[in-house]
Image (cartoon, rainbow, N blue to C red; front, side, top):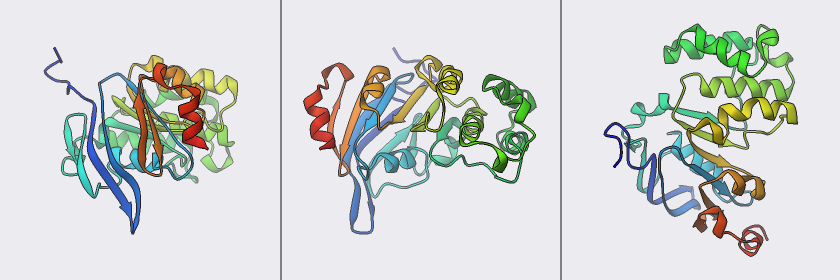
Length: 232
């Protein structure tokens, strides 16, 4: 039996469609993801992966279908879930002329988390010694670590991750994995261009091709032939 305070599904889409002008980016996507599970989203460039993340993050509205995140219907109840979603995408969503610490202070004020949480995250990703330097002076790998801190500042139950390990060397990946990886025990939607790595850490896998679901299945049932058809 599900906890009374926890939705039966962390994410639920029913025939969700999203268009850009005359181009359909997502076409009647239906899926359900239980709390604490990981959904891997695969597909070639332009398949609709980032559009799906932006819908879940309340940054876009569907043109048809229904969408629920953490028990709230979107877009009408987006206000209720925005602070409970950690989005980590291609852009760090940080101010380049501010230091990492200043960026996190702004986010802390927004989410009312207090300074201790920011300090804990900076220590966890190994950024304490560089935290007072302007973001524009840091390498892409260090900026990505800062973006991880920003995404986790409010301790969100849902993580939306678009190639989250991009720009990170093996040592940095080892540092951030406990925070955003499978061991974090958070509900996760992970967009990846590495099918084998995605299959290894997913509970459910969605393959998108030209906006349409090519498959939605447990990773153990997806064979090489299905992946070849997806990327050919």
